[in-house]
Image 1 (cartoon, rainbow, N blue to C red):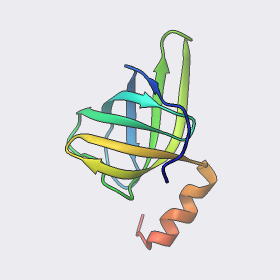
Image 2 (image 1 turned 135 degrees about the vertical axis):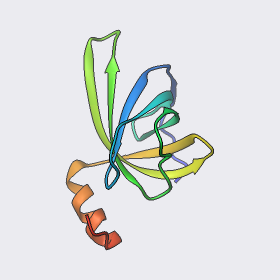
Image 3 (image 1 turned 45 degrees about the vertical axis):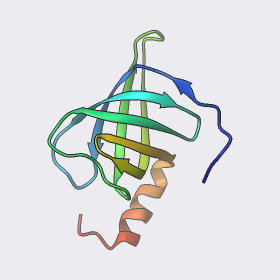
Image 4 (image 1 turned 120 degrees about the vertical axis):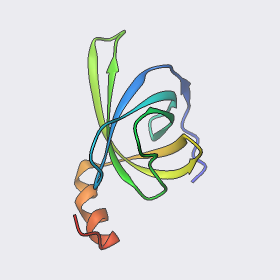
Length: 102
């Protein structure tokens, strides 16, 4: 897993929807690379766990753009979590593979 993607420190705020859970979480984006990100949940009643699939929306204030990505949680510790970006098309496959009853 230890990729060589360059990480960029950031302080953007992200909104997270976890597949299979109701509600929106707010997280602080700590760093970002082309393949994933590290974030800390700052608001919400659920901390995503390893294996969770989520949809993350980031308002890039400086660029006046909204960025939306799908990701899988690859680790979580306390309120922090590491995510790996995945293709939106993979979400259904992964949910089916988990045998989840969504």
